[in-house]
Length: 300
Image 1: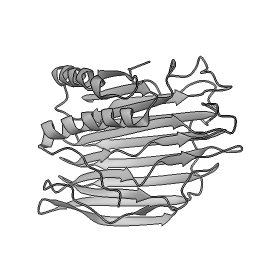
Image 2: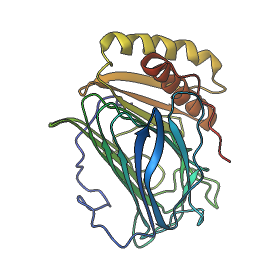
Image 3: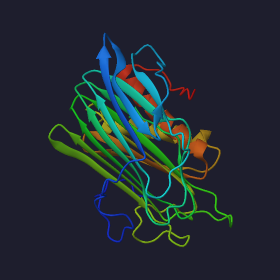
């Protein structure tokens, strides 16, 4: 299981090297500003198959919490979803989804989720969705491009699971690719590319991830000027302690990246195990950096 961040191009991908933006089926444009210590939506626009629930505040930090809704319930071939997220100075946003993202058959074209994120000085952006489920014959790409001020803070996480197939087998999806690029100030701080291509049921040699006998995988990326080698060692120790809480076996690793930042990879067979790991690491960073309490995400 690789732990390093990787270049974003891979030979032989079924997806185009540089995707062409098609007419989107869903658009979300959200600008967050700080008003007297409380983060609010300065601009909130959506169209097509994307919506936002009303804002919540989970603690007294002033961070605003939004839940994304997709009334269509699933992604299909040719579907593009575009997100533009802009956080102004000292604003804070926690973003999640209402439920799992389901990608069904895409026989003639892939489905795409594309994020453009801009973080101003002192801004905080946390994106912690529920799992992505890729079903038989699904091809899915997610691109997240982040431009952030050196004083801003970023945390993004993903869990991917194989969907049900009629013959009861796993890994019937064609390809899942997730690319995250982070620019801090004028410097490209991180390019993380994850490609899983099961093929006929076994992982091909050009896949960036080998799951061994596991079925689910998770990634967490955090970029913050306060992350250093000592912090990574302390979180690694917490991850080792957290192993005792898992229902099934989980293999995990953490690495220090440029940025500065960290990346966590984990594989397992149970979504709840991987989600608990993501939340544990997120809670630790939130506690250390901003004194926030544990996450209890409301989806209503």
